[in-house]
Image 1 (tube, rainbow, N blue to C red):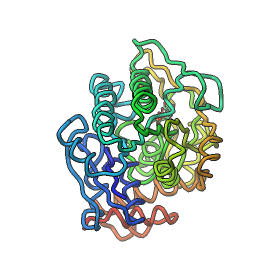
Image 2: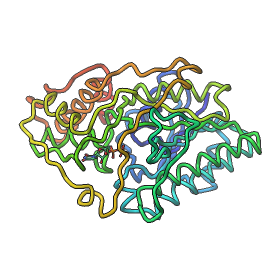
Image 3: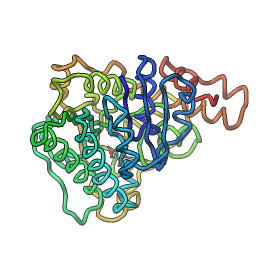
Image 4: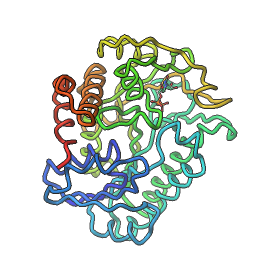
Length: 350
Ligand code: UDP
């Protein structure tokens, strides 16, 4: 089959591209490289059936042409990360809402199935844990910038569902919960690559708030398996699915585990939310998915535990550091699991 992946040079999109190419499918990546990077897909450049276009998902002509050539569209292009959303809210809202409008408009003309990546942020401050797909959303006030991301993705979801019900366009929405793994950058705030980077550099690990807030971290290799199975499953059309791990850990315990696994001498430094994200920032205290729906449909469940996730992120960052400053002692330190070795190998420029 032929897949169009918007945002395919990003962290999740590049892993999905790897999986599809491995399965012998044709993949066309559309990415504007705003938060993605060509280094994430460079290793795929010469693989048969792989193509990429550097461009915006808001460009009607480009999207129309690429949708035409595809059998299935995977829409991952979005402004992601709390930092980006807090710092550049106009861009974040416009990219998320307008980009999805453009993709759905063109997919609808040829009735090409579309999978839209959404986020666990849409549950907002809900306390109805674990979060079920049919649960209520509970957003904060509009003067709290963080909720703009959740609202923009919620509009994307409404639009996808509306296209399915009103126009018969096959759409699937996947709410991703804290996906982590090799190639994820800490530059946009994501906690695991940030804390791993700090631990490896011997700097204090920055834990925001009191660190008692919790998350469930899922390995990207597990997540892309779920995306692949869902987008080729017709019974998924018109549905929303949670995809994520269900083992909860506080950010403070995460920091401690990262220090243990890296053997770092770093301390933990707690930083008030206001200092990290600006005044009036509201965090989600707990975030746990109910994954019964995706399990029932495709039998998916995560196979990797948190230590695998951390190990692979550590191996990837050490590998990147070794590539930037080749020192035999550092290069030999790479390797904490199959996914890490595969990622380190696949990132080698060709
Ligand atoms: N966080 C932290 N230190 C950091 C970056 C993030 O303590 O350097 C916290 C953040 O406040 C949140 C959690 O880690 O409570 C997860 O943050 P991330 O941005 O990775 O994802 P989120 O779940 O907030 O979308």
